[in-house]
Image (cartoon, rainbow, N blue to C red; front, side, top):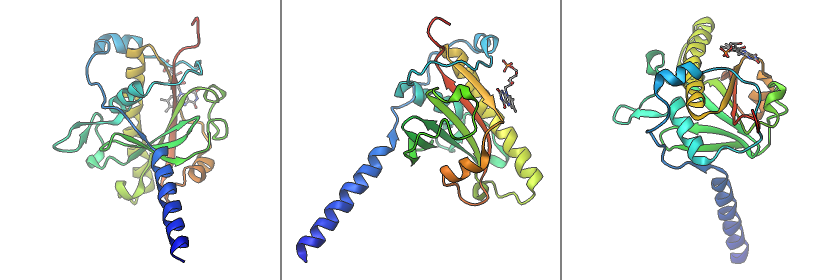
Length: 213
Ligand SMILES: Cc1cc2nc3c(=O)[nH]c(=O)nc-3n(C[C@H](O)[C@H](O)[C@H](O)COP(=O)(O)O)c2cc1C
């Protein structure tokens, strides 16, 4: 009996460890460098061609911070504005190793699926092998807006700010990006295990340009 309990405890501990290991603790973002803002604006563009090359964790951390990180820790406020400071957009990262929810305060990607969802989420073909596609989701509980039109409009605006930060980060780092509205929202709601009422809005694929381009 004692042995069974010990085995069960050990198994649970190992499983908890494995679950934690699947999250990605990102390195501290670097908030320096990059191209001057006017140069990044001059180079901002949509590109739908990507190398398969993975994005190094430091770059991933920097990109996420630029996109939606906390820039005023004492107030918990971010690099983007949001209506009523509700910060209602949940930013998911879809990668070959699984799907993750960005947790800005702990600078972590929390794994929500270990499946590679890149080819089955209705993204454009460009996303199938690209290293990373972001998915923008309204978190209904945080947004607290009952009117559907207001909810979607505000969610769209707040996503747009994040999307533009990602475009500018990519322009600054010589990376490619495409923001898009065509994606399988129902499939993603299921595969990301979204709470009922949370709404998928957009996607944005990022990566390095293909060799020689
Ligand atoms: C709200 C929105 C929705 C978009 N949807 C798509 C899309 O579904 N598929 C796609 O390939 N590009 C999409 N795009 C990218 C636009 O086609 C692109 O921004 C536009 O052609 C202008 O090019 P530029 O970004 O290089 O200035 C979308 C852009 C925005 C802002």
